Image 1: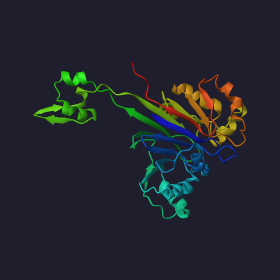
Image 2: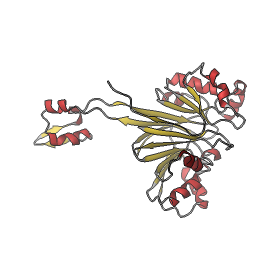
Image 3: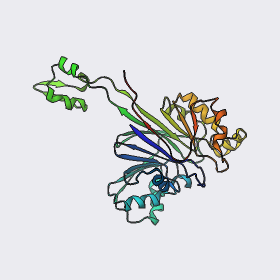
Image 4: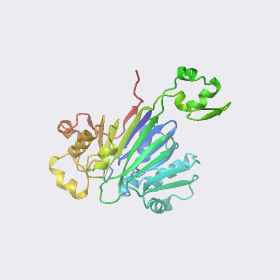
Length: 304
């Protein structure tokens, strides 16, 4: 299962009761963060989670409201006695940006590994997560991220018995290993069924509606999507600054056939996002105007 917490929902600047947008996930003891604006580590403490297990931080882009909280967060991680490496992922130029920020956070007790993105789409496997980064359309290079938690096929002991596979080989085959034993090759498909449906979450802020977002969010269990403006008359402003309105985000969610959408990254002028949700739900019914700290646990689907 995958725990998620949308730590903050504000765009551009933090407001009283509204931190800057960041998402934190937890999977099998590993914690991942997407974006790290001012106030992120406070939001983590408010949630009651720990900064210590964070081993991966993804950045959508390098505007201040998405990365300015990083030095303080890394210092807190160091003060929590973390010594294991931390991997940072983001658009090209990541190492230069981060090293500039770390002038005020010297002497960290852990190594930082950098993965810089340059292609339109890139796939990464790290700490149990299968991550796809995909370019979107903002006024600087910006990526969205889809997190897939894959699930292997079910183990069938009856298949193992039918294939006369020695019991002592079962555990190796369950792990996906091929085993040669007494002159015969045994393969995982001899005991394991087809891959089962996993968990899929897509996170995207600071973009116009684009096909890459629709394609990469296809059939997601959850789409966390920016809605900078709830007012219907702000379309021209959204186009100018390359953001989305609630209604544009709802059309993306509908076209991508996602199960649920959380809106986030609100304009500071948008004081009551929930006032617009009924109209938005006429486009995509399962839409929620998120508040800071909105959380859920996504589980693998039940099987017959």
